[in-house]
Image (cartoon, rainbow, N blue to C red; front, side, top):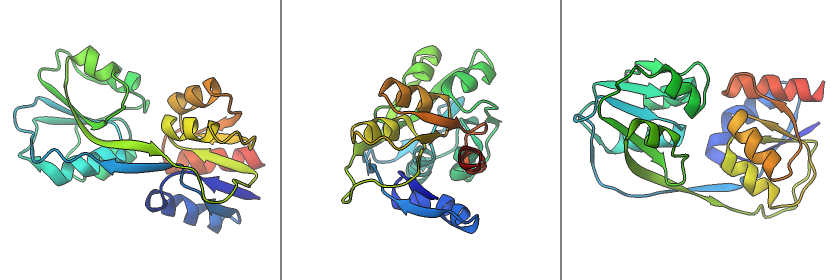
Length: 209
C-alpha cells in the first residue's frame, strides 16, 4: 500500500517515518512551495492577542518577533508547539471558526500573522491587523503521481492536487481541506478526526483497512 504525501519535504518527514513504521510504502511528492515574505521585525507587545493559524506562520513569526503579546491563541496543537512559547488558547476544533468560537470577547487588539492567502474570517470578525509572512506556490511533481492514497494537509494542497487531474483517493486533515478538495472534484475517503499528525495516521489506517 503506497501513500503519497504532498507537503514540502521538510514538513513530511515525521508523517513519513510514522507511516513507514506501520508498514506503508511512502512517496513524498510536494505540491506546494512556501516562500517567506520578508517584513523585518514585527512588534508583538502592542497586541492583546496574537492569533496563529499554521505551523509555518508560527515559525516565521517567532523568527521575526520583537517583544511578547499579552496572550497567544493557536488553531491547533501542532501550531502551538511550533510557536515554542506560552500559548493561552488552543482551539478544540482546529479551524478559524473553532478558534473564533473560543476566543474571549471583546478580544482587544489582535494580530493575525500567517499565509498571504489565508482565509480572512478571523481578520474580519476580530478587526485584526494582518501581516503576511509567507506565500504558497503550487508546484508540479517531477514524476507522475502514483499510489493508492494521497494525504492532503491543507486547502492549498487540495487545490494543487486537483490541478493534476489524478484520480487517487485522498485523506484530508480537516473540514477546510475537505471542502476545498471536494469543490475541486477530489474524492475524499477519510477526514482526520483530530487535525494533527495522529489524526492523519488514524485516517490513513482507517482508509486502508
